[in-house]
Amino acid sequence: MTSQNIESELSYAYLHAICGKAGLSCKQGDRHDDGAGVDAEITYRGELPHPYITEVQLNIQLKATTIQP
Image (cartoon, rainbow, N blue to C red; front, side, top):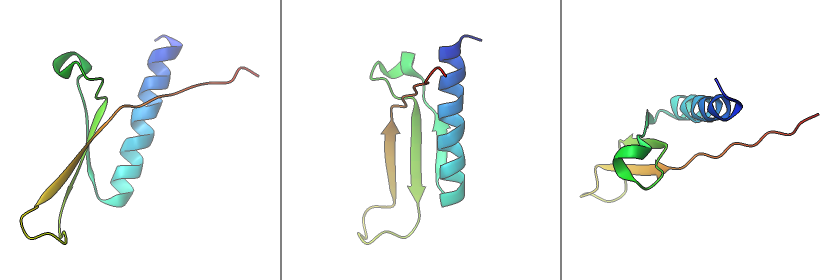
C-alpha cells in the first residue's frame, strides 16, 4: 500500500469509530460514482425536533496529513 492509501484507510477508520461511539451509521463513499469527492456518508435516524424529517445524511470528504520526524 502506498502511504496515501494508508492515510486514507486510517482517516476512514477514525471516522467510523467516532460514528460508532455516537450511534450513527457510517459507510464508505465511492468517489468514482458521484464525482464530488464523497469519501463517507454519515446517517442519523432517530428523534428529531422536526416532525417531517426522519433522518439526516452528511456527505464527508476526508483529508489526512503526516509529519516526517
